[in-house]
Length: 542
Ligand code: TNX
Image (tube, rainbow, N blue to C red):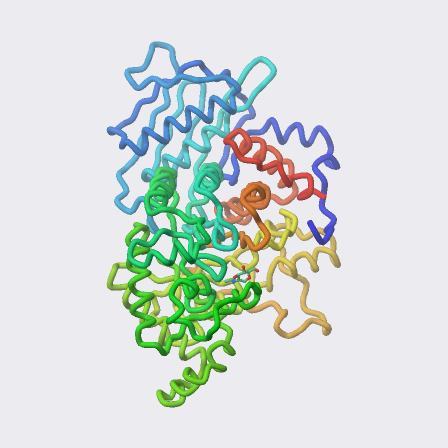
């Protein structure tokens, strides 16, 4: 919005249209199938819950969250009774299978939900499907003048992408644990299932280390998560079906680690306050002790996070940092290392194989694919579709984040209209196209390039079906150079709700025309969960 893009304003829409929209059940992200007659029935004071097989403690906690949320959305408390049903009372039947892959890359998330005055039935493929079904059920509650009602509906639902992430940068600004926990509640509400947490960068290293305590005593400026807090974060995320993928960025973006342990630095001195310098400092990959140090740091950190995926960063190694260092240049010559990229590849292979022995799948920003790396490395594409094309063609599983950087301050619709599989350059091109040709319908391709377009901006050929199978999904990212914790909710929400729909729903289920009124309602719901999702909605709509 900073660029002042013209957007339809919610209040520009016909009032009847908005009213109808609000009266129709709003489940966001849009389910694959939602059938409704528009009818609704009074929400009872008491709901009897019947499980077809004994629920795990995790599912019982999910049910209690549902009870709390329904109470908030309904404006009055509701009681749940475990079976046997009371005569005449409404019964919520929950059927689910066990899913040993929960929570994780292969968890089963599908569910069906039937809501009628004669009873509610939720049938889920596994625990993740139960969580999603309960969330959808809560979104069928609304307040009418004569009391809260439940919309009658039949829902069949399953996500388009298995990886629907939110990346938060806790290095540039520390985000205290309660701020993160609030994001988990909001993520559950919109079915985002991966919290990618950027825990180390030039600015700070944010996790307590028992092996290398200077990492947090020196490297965090006193603001870090204790290991117990990390366990709590993972527990709360797991409860909500959310995976936590940690990132500790090396060999670039490592000033904070080097401040603590300067002997592994490529360049001295390390006494700057210049932000660009802090961003540039890199590890010395030619010091034989460096990868041992990193392996030990990674081993300690990897043990804190049960998810199989561990993100090693790998972005923006500034060639000069290494090439200008006399001893690194001499090493490269002596060992016939042809380029800085090849040097980084050697380093990546080293730390990746150590992580692999610990059962981890390694993930890195798209720079890590500039040389030979193991095929099971997951690539996070942030520099544009060419990198997505390259990674998927090489058989790497890929997560797309470049078009979804929230710190670029684009309006919600500019992010929303960019499909992860669209091979246009990014949301900026989508906006430019919208400005020259009128509003871009969802999923429209950009106009053909004109002669003034730079060649690198030209649309790329679409991904082949084989390449598409390697796109795990996408994530929206908030870099926090200029985002303090008090600004967090307003920067992320409700725009991340729009992207959650883009990542969950099939393109034909995404509707840009109704996006803003729907986001306004979602922001209301998120505020009920304790967020400040409305902090920026006015600006978002401008
Ligand atoms: C580039 S995106 C970075 C981050 C910055 C971001 C925004 C990426 C992998 N690296 O270190 O925070 O730009 O300034």
